[in-house]
Length: 324
Image (cartoon, rainbow, N blue to C red; front, side, top):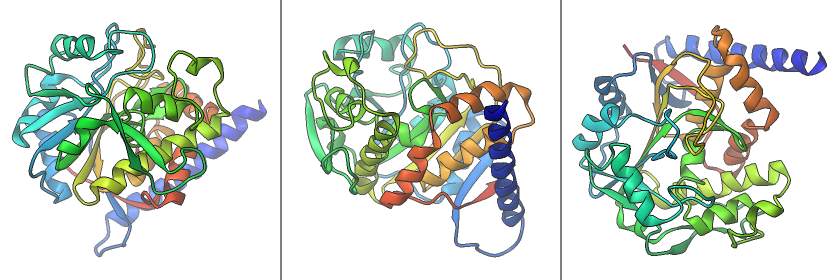
């Protein structure tokens, strides 16, 4: 009962803040806050519309970072939904191998998943750590010793589109832009580094001795900051809030979504974007949001957002701009 009451109070507090931001976005003038654009109808056309609203053109060799989805799962982004956008920016779909047994744990198998899930049919694909890892410096923090491990191919891209499927996550509470930047952009070795909070690089022993939860979440924020630091203003963030299961696309048997689709959100600030997506879950009048709220709260999910802000990776203070 006490836990339920605390969750309700947290929801009301977030709802009040978010409603104020929505009101602010309807008035004239620049608030100085990070802008988060939102469009409720999830279509290929609206994915392009929200990209154009950001006002930052994807130029050069463009990597579009998605989750390719573990086979058996079915909630990952539909290749047909993202096709027109990816082709418009002349993007290459990029991913890294996983640090757990499955169909994406090695490069050849992962390439087959890209084919089976329809991504190879719409654009070139690249498994970033096919040729190993390299260190990229973070913005600071206390766990990863000042660096993250990413796939060696990542440096070949001039511009990155972080195209995320927002959903729950068994360990992180939720997966959005920051998770796509951190665990998503980390090489297989980097995933071990993050999950162990900078204590281990051996995938075979990783799951035997996991760190305290907040250490893991802070490690995600630190690793995300390495990608943000590297790309500067050569990166954008788009999150699609559909198929909102409590489980990640890395799960081969995810729970079915109980909450209805919300829309597409986008920003030049990944911290603001994740905060806005979480807020949309918490203030939703859809009673199906309860499971996802519980998943986020029980895993301290918002701690990643707070820590990313402390590192200077972005701001939780945002202005919501509704598009039609």
